Image (cartoon, rainbow, N blue to C red; front, side):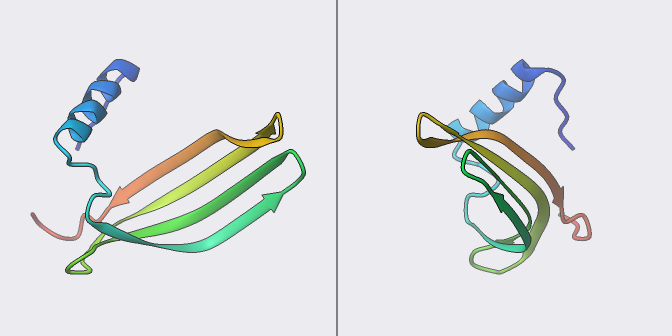
Length: 94
């Protein structure tokens, strides 16, 4: 299990993942379930569950619960918030 205290430790961990080309979603495919949307002229939100699987083997990797909020700024949509909670598959031994 990895835990980070403060932004600098998280920044260092993510930088190392990208430099090693070992991001969590590399080589995976996703399926979204239970999607909810609310769209107004200046703001929109989207919530969903996402299941991740290995591309080649289709092995279940984990589930995430996600929230996206966008706002229109000067006529263009901009991401205002992205919430992501990942629950890896802990039933498989490594």
